[in-house]
Amino acid sequence: MKLEFLGAAREVTGSKHLITTKHGTKILLDCGMYQGKGLETDAMNRDLGFDPKEVDYLILSHAHIDHSGLIPYIYKLGFNGTVLCTPATRDLCSIMLADAGRIQESDTHTFNKKRQSQGLPPVEPIYTLADAQACMSCFISVPYHKKFNIEGEVTVEFFDAGHILGSACVYLEIKEGRRIIKLGFTGDIGRYNKHILKDPEPFPQVDYLIMESTYGDRLHTTISNAEQELLMAVLDTCTKKRGKLIIPSFAIGRAQEIIYALDRLRNKQLLPDIDCFVDSPLSVNATNIMRLHPECFNDEIVEYMKSDPDPFGFDRLQYIQSVEASKALNVRNKACIIISASGMMEAGRVKHHLANNIENPKTTILCVGYCEPTTLGAKIMRGDKTVSIFGHQHEVRAELRRIESLSGHGDYSEMINYIGCQDKFRLKKIILVHGEAETQEHFRDTLHEAGYKRVDIPKRLDAIEL
Ligand SMILES: [Zn+2]
Image 1: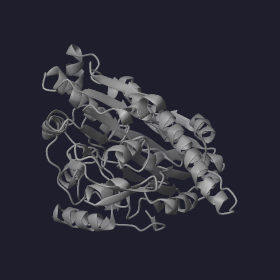
Image 2 (image 1 turned 180 degrees about the vertical axis):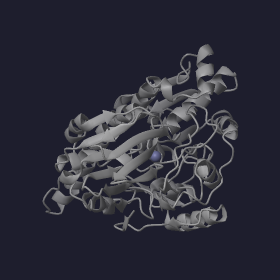
Image 3 (image 1 turned 135 degrees about the horizontal axis):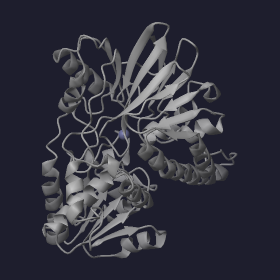
Image 4 (image 1 turned 60 degrees about the horizontal axis):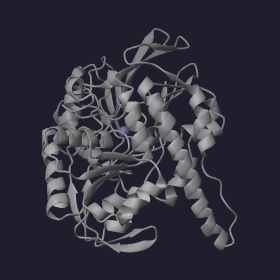
């Protein structure tokens, strides 16, 4: 069989890896979008490196856009195969891809206005809301631990990766005559001892493992500190400075972790009487989907829900859908907490909140996740004195804070712990994807020290025979 790396190779977005079996069946692992590099990404996203019409199956590890975001695009180009994923991933995709379709339409609209003023012809969005809605007809959901057989040749099974709701490590058995190749694809690996989702679970022995490496050179602080760090940020900003605490957050996963932490602090009577707003329609919908999938919850939250049936809601928390209500927050002077997407501060309503508050020293921007190095979030958090938001220069006078332990990705010790379920001698090769090149080299050294001798770091368009 052949394995080609078409994205997230020595980089952190655009996850796409194509399997071609001996009989010619084409199976794509993830179909993610490149994010965070401005105009350059559009060209990278349109250049797939394969013909969507030839792909028979797409196996999706989880719903994040850097793993799923090009599904509507390949559908538009003639993909007529089947998308396999867990039920929660399917549900999340139905809202996330629609949201991505809307963003493509509105970004292209803005871009075309500029082009028109330069006398240039308009361009088409890579896909639209309608494409995103239509592609959902290709999805089949397969629960964790149920085997799905592809044409008597490949067996697929999902194992909980503990990264976001529905996230999976994909375990494949690929038959080639008498030989069976066992291939694992971790997708993104979550952290251990989280508050809502289960730990990443062990998966069967594989011969080859395609493994993410986002935090291959980092150690996080323990998750239990996050609640305390969040409380300190609230007290310092909202009680002492009487300012706004802006928490840019991925709509899926991180937002619910923050909301649940605030809910716990409120129940413990530690959270002061401060208004909290979740200003992101996608976060609102994602929270509702989360409520529909208690099968993904760990024992802690199940126990918690016996005394508080809604861990994502409390008296001072408001979910905001409408644009008018979101705009009303701009003129509000009172101290408050605003949780808003996107996490990397590149898109979404959070950009308006930043534009309106970043020059105010009473404001605190609390970064709770990874920011790709070219994004606005990375520029702010690395300490740039001025940043451009919506084409205007803003001085950064807001206080900057960071909680790293809420990361959705395990650090290197957690990732090594995760692959502890594998026999090092039977594992023929680890193939690192989804990481910045330097981080991956660091992680390769760490894996070598841990006794994993064969570790490859493929480049984009590299192909290997297994
Ligand atoms: Zn992810």
